[in-house]
Image 1 (cartoon, rainbow, N blue to C red):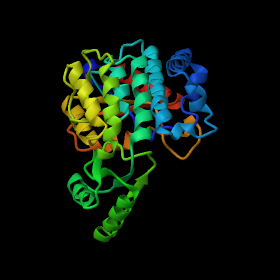
Image 2 (tube, rainbow, N blue to C red; image 1 turned 45 degrees about the vertical axis):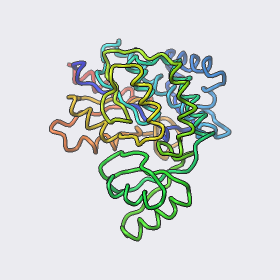
Image 3 (cartoon, rainbow, N blue to C red; image 1 turned 60 degrees about the horizontal axis):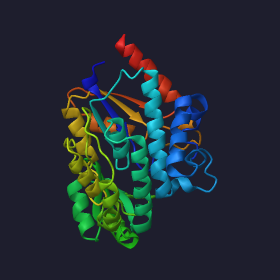
Image 4 (cartoon, rainbow, N blue to C red; image 1 turned 90 degrees about the vertical axis):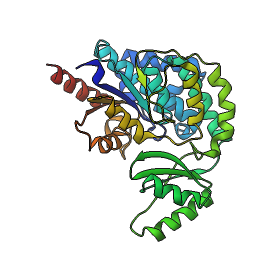
Length: 328
């Protein structure tokens, strides 16, 4: 497999669950070391919080973000070790919080710096953010028309027919009612978040986050990273990266454009690291968080990239087997 063909992807908030990472932690020393590094950096036991979580803290933004980052990096490091560091991406991308994991994968941020950033980011978003979020089965233009009538804003463009908006709860209630009046067969979904992320209701959190970004070292490497804010590749400039991460907090995540940009860069293989979704409670029962969006986004491409994941023991083994077969 050529280096230029590989895209590493990372999920954002919503991919967390109690028990996340526990299977890999039990079997692999490099995963245990990653969690130990996270505990030392954060000053609290992110390992226990991720695995046991008797108090449900993993769903609080201040803990969710470092928990997902730690799991994502643990999966990435394990994969890298088991493939002897031979499979390096040319492009990395992550959804919202996942952009920080992508920056770690590219070597732009070290793990410790990324942990400090997302820990502070999560605290600020939880403490100074406001509102809620609603997923609409509509395109961007239709969603914007509806949102603007109800003091809401676009928060994410995940697919051409899947847009997330944010606003105060009462405004979202009115928006949802009008949606069913205009489109009787369509229904929106309220998302479980602590605020209207990536909208004007996060501006105060962003203002407080800016000095933390400015005090963090960003390295420029040969691996390119996609920006949620622009939808395209980050510029090879530390100040520009900081600015776009600041703006990302209160502007829409242009995720579909990120995936289109990845296709246009010539990506032929995609690997998603970290998190998991699904009704089951154990890591083995979880599925990759952004797999369906990725596959739908790539559906019309001239050459559809192959998709793999490393989120638990099962997907790790499947991915290693598949990549070994394709290389032979």
